[in-house]
Length: 188
Image 1 (spheres, rainbow, N blue to C red):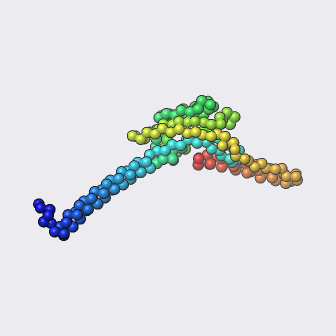
Image 2: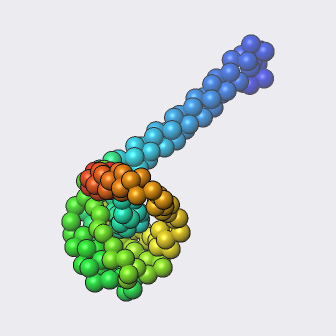
Image 3: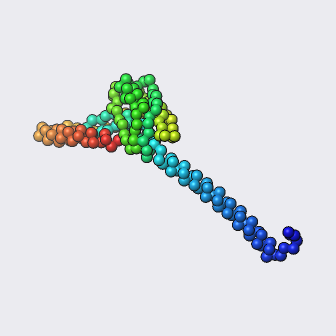
């Protein structure tokens, strides 16, 4: 083919074919990148995600809990867990019992903390898996944060009758709050 004999319309046809080919290749590359990104997003959203944190429940009395929760969308097998040596033996026993156990999506496992032996900081490292997915995470939990909360105290009334009514309401309130305590524990 002799390129010198091509007319202007022939050159326009050649260049539009080349431009169409180039634009098509770019579109295919963008589509493939988008498919790969979507696959990764779907894979990530379907993976388990375990978090460990400490919290208090304040319904009449204040209880501190160490909470292990799967906020992901699938179950996970906890393959290993390690933690600070400064924990109380009961907390160590609780954490060791989690090894080789499964935690389903949305499940919360909690353990009450022994108040007088709580260290100021706890480090917990957890490894878990779900099929081909494996993850290792480290949590630094500031236990001092739980003690920085301030509490309001009930002041006694001057009148004896008012004091008796006030105590009656306070006792009723404490009884109700203790009942709600069990309900709230399930919502952690």
